[in-house]
Length: 195
Image (tube, rainbow, N blue to C red; front, side, top):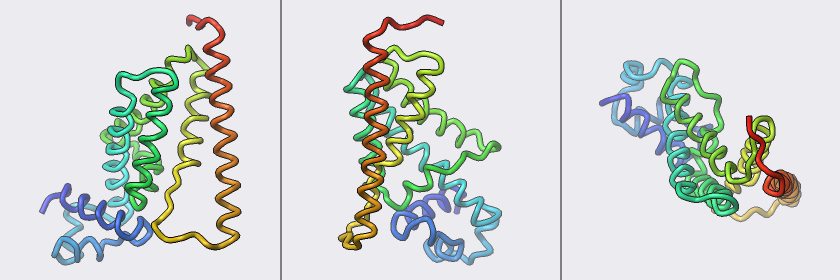
């Protein structure tokens, strides 16, 4: 068994049961080995979660960059948003692990996180945003994408409190998208600044 096989089993378990129920014992059962055997591949459950985060961040970054490739302006932003939402809905268990801070000692995780950020930057490039305006728009876009991920499970949400919370999240996300749209449209109306 390889470290990649351990991580793959953990990704499957996270998708099936959520990242909170990811344990070394569960991964050992899934892979058919004794729990102590996993320590040859990962030093702790936290280290395993970090490796899973690196893998799923790379998956998300690839999905986003594929969606944006060859597109610009509204088409790029729309494709980015759809790809992000589709990933979150298709992988509700692994999606939260894409939000972890990359391990500074893991170059693959850092590269995956950078690709995800640069894909958002690329989607916004058509609006002529530079410098601080580009940085701010990227932050707003990423915040809106995370807020509006709609990572609902297949079960019916009936709690009034939960529905109320969802409406507040939706309004907050809609506000972020409105801010992003205003920023991009304002930049599109003005000539792009150089330097």
